[in-house]
Image (cartoon, rainbow, N blue to C red):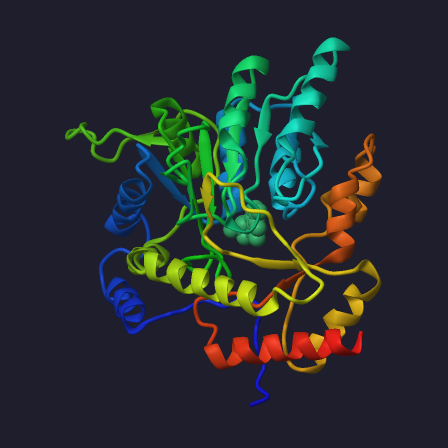
Length: 382
Ligand SMILES: Cc1ncc(COP(=O)(O)O)c(C=O)c1O
């Protein structure tokens, strides 16, 4: 068997297809009941009070920041090992971006965050308006400590949980917003569940929910109780069309039904990798004891000298691997617009030594065995 093994891929069932077709045959393709139903199911699943479905996690991040009042010359802090959307959304608000290094959890190093905040305060420097912990690969950041720091240094917390729906932290589902103001999910096809493209924001705060709801659709509020002037609507703020449509939401509803099974399959895949790769010279992501990951990514770290060689070796055997992510400050746009003040040793090490192996709920045992075989073969030669 020599067919291509993708690093990630959606799993679509007959139930998903049926649900989408039913919506296509219905009266509403957008702004119907499906998005409302999907949002309700997201709140039931995560035990958060409110959910707003959106057309991507990127727009979900932007509206989250705006709802918290992020504006020109404010500051956000996050880790450099993330997708550029995390920080781009802040730049769109006119804010400044700075980074805190990661640690062996591949998530923000909370001790370094604390010392950075301490120094800023001591030197009367700008403190962040928002800190964005990124749950890389679906492994939760140390949210309790971040929450504590948010009170001490007066900042808001937006969890970039694009990878993490289905995971838990301290026995709370990620998305419960137990330790944050807002949480963002992505439903891009490589994520845990998909709506094609799509995202959502979850919160327990009514005023943030209302702001995001309004900004999602041009800043327009419709008065549902006004039976006389049924045609009336008012634009009260400035907004966008960032809506999820009903076709996407109907896919989200049936995907969400399967999430626990998806996570179980991913967990089994991860444990099989751990078991079979334990004797190879590799390092794995450290799992903090309070988290049950969603197992979005399976990252291995190898000696920097052989990392690229391993990429190509896997590719030559039709195995697609990937790198999540290039440190954001290394992108040309950030190189010319962001002045790097710290060294980010761990992020640099991560960048030069990491590889994401194939990990998705559709990965077959035979495919995983092949990946393991090829890895063993590589290390025998190198
Ligand atoms: C950490 C992180 N944040 C944000 C995003 C943006 O998600 P979307 O593609 O749904 O806009 C991604 C997508 O890969 C991501 O990995």
